[in-house]
Image 1 (cartoon, rainbow, N blue to C red):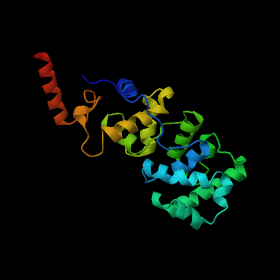
Image 2 (tube, rainbow, N blue to C red):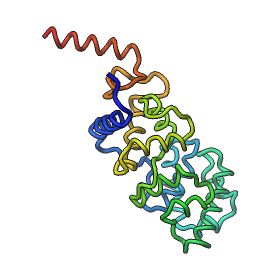
Image 3 (spheres, rainbow, N blue to C red):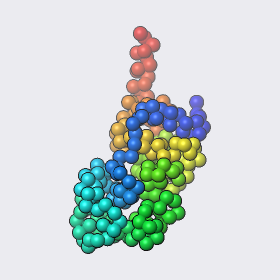
Image 4 (tube, rainbow, N blue to C red):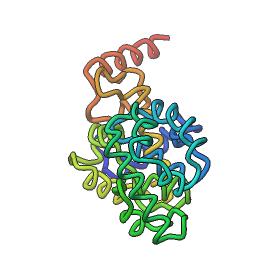
Length: 228
């Protein structure tokens, strides 16, 4: 029996919350400023690689002024392994310049102001707002969140902005911050882009994209249970 998207979203939240009670932001940080830098670096890069880089980076650069006190080429070398290092270095320095000139050296706490910083779009702003300030400004949509939202029938869209819009309509605001973490954990461990483990998924009975193999395994397990 088909259920509404709202009920589908509620059930997804209930199950993933129980499955991943320790889910959290994977980017290591001790301040809103560090999280901002880490999130800018995470574009087209794994969180693991970013954490390796920032373990050294955050010891060398502690304030926005520090990033502006060295030549851009030096910063590029320090973040080289995250990829797209020239553009990222340029954006980091631009963001730091604006933080100093417009916000008194502190990361702003509003979506509107964050979006004026170099290299900051809605995803980065939502990450900082939710995980540094505890403000549910929207739903973070990365590749995992988008993929799972589509597979689970919560959206049909590809663009992060439209996926976020659909999720925000379906998901209570109290879950906007944590939902991406639950989906990201599930996407990395079970619902992978290639060869998702549908048979071992806690959502397989409500997932419209579940594989035939999952259905076979489910029927087999059901038959085995009924024969006991």
